Picture 1: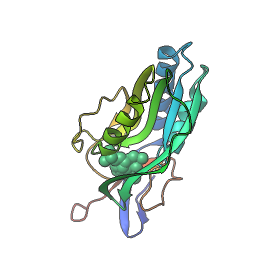
Picture 2: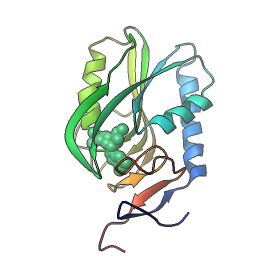
Picture 3: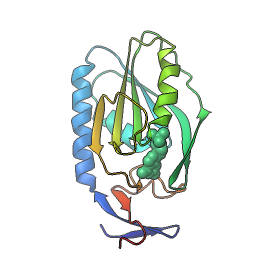
Length: 182
Ligand code: 5GP
Ligand code: MG
Protein backbone atom coordinates (compact mmCIF):
# COMPACT_ATOMS: atom_id res chain seq x y z
CA UNK A 1 0.00 0.00 0.00
CA UNK A 2 1.34 3.41 -0.89
CA UNK A 3 0.07 6.95 -1.43
CA UNK A 4 -2.57 7.29 -4.15
CA UNK A 5 -3.70 10.36 -6.09
CA UNK A 6 -7.32 10.84 -7.17
CA UNK A 7 -8.85 14.01 -8.67
CA UNK A 8 -5.97 16.17 -7.44
CA UNK A 9 -6.08 14.92 -3.83
CA UNK A 10 -3.67 12.53 -2.13
CA UNK A 11 -4.57 9.68 0.19
CA UNK A 12 -2.41 7.54 2.46
CA UNK A 13 -2.98 3.94 3.60
CA UNK A 14 -5.10 3.77 6.76
CA UNK A 15 -6.89 0.41 7.32
CA UNK A 16 -5.42 -2.67 5.60
CA UNK A 17 -7.66 -5.22 3.91
CA UNK A 18 -6.90 -8.01 6.41
CA UNK A 19 -7.88 -5.84 9.38
CA UNK A 20 -11.12 -4.74 7.70
CA UNK A 21 -12.01 -8.36 6.93
CA UNK A 22 -11.18 -9.44 10.50
CA UNK A 23 -13.48 -6.78 12.02
CA UNK A 24 -16.29 -7.38 9.53
CA UNK A 25 -16.16 -11.11 10.19
CA UNK A 26 -16.25 -10.47 13.97
CA UNK A 27 -19.32 -8.27 13.51
CA UNK A 28 -21.07 -10.93 11.39
CA UNK A 29 -20.38 -13.51 14.12
CA UNK A 30 -21.89 -11.18 16.71
CA UNK A 31 -24.97 -10.68 14.51
CA UNK A 32 -25.22 -14.46 14.05
CA UNK A 33 -25.42 -14.77 17.84
CA UNK A 34 -27.74 -11.84 18.48
CA UNK A 35 -30.23 -12.69 15.71
CA UNK A 36 -30.45 -16.48 15.81
CA UNK A 37 -34.04 -17.51 14.93
CA UNK A 38 -35.09 -13.87 14.43
CA UNK A 39 -34.92 -13.88 10.62
CA UNK A 40 -33.68 -10.28 10.56
CA UNK A 41 -34.00 -7.89 7.65
CA UNK A 42 -30.86 -5.94 6.77
CA UNK A 43 -31.28 -2.58 5.08
CA UNK A 44 -28.05 -1.53 3.38
CA UNK A 45 -27.67 2.11 2.46
CA UNK A 46 -26.28 2.67 -1.03
CA UNK A 47 -23.91 3.58 -2.44
CA UNK A 48 -21.15 3.55 0.17
CA UNK A 49 -22.15 0.43 2.10
CA UNK A 50 -22.36 -2.04 -0.79
CA UNK A 51 -19.03 -3.74 -0.07
CA UNK A 52 -19.46 -3.79 3.69
CA UNK A 53 -22.99 -5.16 3.27
CA UNK A 54 -21.84 -7.83 0.82
CA UNK A 55 -19.05 -9.00 3.14
CA UNK A 56 -21.28 -9.00 6.24
CA UNK A 57 -23.86 -11.00 4.33
CA UNK A 58 -21.25 -13.50 3.07
CA UNK A 59 -19.96 -14.13 6.59
CA UNK A 60 -23.46 -14.42 8.07
CA UNK A 61 -24.78 -17.98 8.58
CA UNK A 62 -28.27 -17.36 10.04
CA UNK A 63 -31.43 -16.98 7.96
CA UNK A 64 -31.66 -13.34 6.98
CA UNK A 65 -32.92 -11.02 4.26
CA UNK A 66 -31.28 -7.97 2.78
CA UNK A 67 -32.65 -5.02 0.83
CA UNK A 68 -31.17 -1.74 -0.35
CA UNK A 69 -32.08 1.90 -0.27
CA UNK A 70 -30.16 4.87 -1.58
CA UNK A 71 -29.56 8.02 0.43
CA UNK A 72 -27.05 10.73 -0.42
CA UNK A 73 -25.75 13.88 1.23
CA UNK A 74 -22.13 14.15 0.13
CA UNK A 75 -20.59 16.08 -2.75
CA UNK A 76 -16.82 15.71 -3.11
CA UNK A 77 -15.28 15.59 0.37
CA UNK A 78 -17.94 17.71 2.14
CA UNK A 79 -21.41 16.92 3.44
CA UNK A 80 -24.05 19.12 1.77
CA UNK A 81 -26.21 18.86 4.86
CA UNK A 82 -29.17 17.79 2.75
CA UNK A 83 -30.24 14.15 2.66
CA UNK A 84 -31.89 12.94 -0.54
CA UNK A 85 -33.74 9.60 -0.90
CA UNK A 86 -32.78 8.42 -4.36
CA UNK A 87 -34.16 4.86 -4.04
CA UNK A 88 -36.77 4.20 -1.35
CA UNK A 89 -37.66 1.19 0.77
CA UNK A 90 -39.79 -1.40 -1.03
CA UNK A 91 -40.02 -3.93 1.82
CA UNK A 92 -42.54 -4.07 4.67
CA UNK A 93 -40.63 -3.76 7.96
CA UNK A 94 -43.62 -3.94 10.31
CA UNK A 95 -42.83 -6.46 13.11
CA UNK A 96 -39.45 -7.28 11.55
CA UNK A 97 -36.08 -7.23 13.29
CA UNK A 98 -34.29 -4.58 11.24
CA UNK A 99 -30.57 -3.83 11.09
CA UNK A 100 -29.32 -0.84 9.13
CA UNK A 101 -25.98 -1.37 7.39
CA UNK A 102 -24.19 1.92 6.77
CA UNK A 103 -20.63 2.62 5.69
CA UNK A 104 -19.93 5.56 7.96
CA UNK A 105 -21.53 7.93 10.45
CA UNK A 106 -20.00 11.36 10.09
CA UNK A 107 -22.29 14.21 11.22
CA UNK A 108 -25.06 11.68 11.83
CA UNK A 109 -27.53 13.72 9.79
CA UNK A 110 -28.37 10.89 7.38
CA UNK A 111 -29.29 8.49 10.22
CA UNK A 112 -31.02 11.23 12.17
CA UNK A 113 -33.42 11.80 9.27
CA UNK A 114 -33.81 8.19 8.20
CA UNK A 115 -34.27 6.32 11.52
CA UNK A 116 -37.53 8.08 12.55
CA UNK A 117 -39.04 7.16 9.15
CA UNK A 118 -38.32 3.50 9.94
CA UNK A 119 -39.55 3.70 13.55
CA UNK A 120 -42.87 5.00 12.19
CA UNK A 121 -43.33 1.68 10.41
CA UNK A 122 -43.12 -0.17 13.75
CA UNK A 123 -40.39 -2.75 13.29
CA UNK A 124 -40.03 -5.34 16.09
CA UNK A 125 -36.55 -3.89 16.67
CA UNK A 126 -34.24 -1.46 14.91
CA UNK A 127 -30.45 -1.49 15.24
CA UNK A 128 -27.64 0.33 13.47
CA UNK A 129 -24.47 -1.47 12.29
CA UNK A 130 -21.72 0.63 10.75
CA UNK A 131 -18.23 0.10 9.41
CA UNK A 132 -16.78 3.46 10.45
CA UNK A 133 -17.64 6.15 12.98
CA UNK A 134 -16.15 9.64 13.21
CA UNK A 135 -17.10 10.50 16.82
CA UNK A 136 -15.53 13.98 16.63
CA UNK A 137 -17.70 14.92 13.64
CA UNK A 138 -20.98 13.55 14.96
CA UNK A 139 -23.50 16.31 15.79
CA UNK A 140 -26.64 14.21 16.19
CA UNK A 141 -27.30 11.79 19.01
CA UNK A 142 -27.52 8.45 17.19
CA UNK A 143 -27.45 5.12 19.04
CA UNK A 144 -24.85 3.03 17.25
CA UNK A 145 -25.33 -0.64 18.14
CA UNK A 146 -22.48 -2.19 16.17
CA UNK A 147 -19.36 -0.47 14.85
CA UNK A 148 -16.16 -1.88 13.34
CA UNK A 149 -13.85 1.16 13.65
CA UNK A 150 -13.86 4.58 15.35
CA UNK A 151 -11.72 6.91 13.25
CA UNK A 152 -10.47 10.52 13.32
CA UNK A 153 -12.41 13.28 11.58
CA UNK A 154 -10.64 12.98 8.23
CA UNK A 155 -12.06 12.06 4.83
CA UNK A 156 -11.52 8.41 3.89
CA UNK A 157 -12.07 6.33 0.76
CA UNK A 158 -11.92 2.74 -0.43
CA UNK A 159 -13.88 -0.43 0.41
CA UNK A 160 -17.04 1.05 -1.10
CA UNK A 161 -16.43 4.66 -0.02
CA UNK A 162 -15.75 7.13 -2.81
CA UNK A 163 -14.27 10.49 -3.58
CA UNK A 164 -16.54 12.01 -6.26
CA UNK A 165 -17.52 8.55 -7.43
CA UNK A 166 -14.04 7.07 -7.63
CA UNK A 167 -12.03 4.83 -5.32
CA UNK A 168 -14.84 2.48 -4.30
CA UNK A 169 -13.03 -0.55 -5.76
CA UNK A 170 -9.97 -0.18 -3.52
CA UNK A 171 -9.82 -3.08 -1.05
CA UNK A 172 -8.16 -1.08 1.73
CA UNK A 173 -9.27 2.19 3.34
CA UNK A 174 -7.20 5.31 2.67
CA UNK A 175 -7.21 8.62 4.53
CA UNK A 176 -6.85 12.05 2.93
CA UNK A 177 -3.52 13.84 3.30
CA UNK A 178 -4.57 17.36 4.25
CA UNK A 179 -2.73 20.14 2.46
CA UNK A 180 0.09 21.69 4.43
CA UNK A 181 0.49 18.55 6.58
CA UNK A 182 2.68 16.61 4.17
P1 5GP B 1 -23.55 11.96 7.73
O1 5GP B 1 -24.97 12.16 7.32
O2 5GP B 1 -23.38 11.07 8.94
O3 5GP B 1 -22.82 13.25 7.89
O4 5GP B 1 -22.81 11.30 6.52
C1 5GP B 1 -23.09 10.05 6.14
C2 5GP B 1 -22.68 9.76 4.72
O5 5GP B 1 -21.68 10.65 4.24
C3 5GP B 1 -22.07 8.40 4.67
O6 5GP B 1 -23.05 7.44 4.42
C4 5GP B 1 -21.08 8.52 3.54
O7 5GP B 1 -21.70 8.18 2.34
C5 5GP B 1 -20.68 9.96 3.52
N1 5GP B 1 -19.36 10.16 4.20
C6 5GP B 1 -19.15 10.66 5.43
N2 5GP B 1 -17.83 10.71 5.72
C7 5GP B 1 -17.19 10.20 4.64
C8 5GP B 1 -15.80 9.98 4.33
O8 5GP B 1 -14.86 10.23 5.10
N3 5GP B 1 -15.54 9.44 3.11
C9 5GP B 1 -16.53 9.13 2.21
N4 5GP B 1 -16.15 8.63 1.04
N5 5GP B 1 -17.84 9.34 2.47
C10 5GP B 1 -18.17 9.88 3.66
MG1 MG C 1 -23.33 6.26 2.82
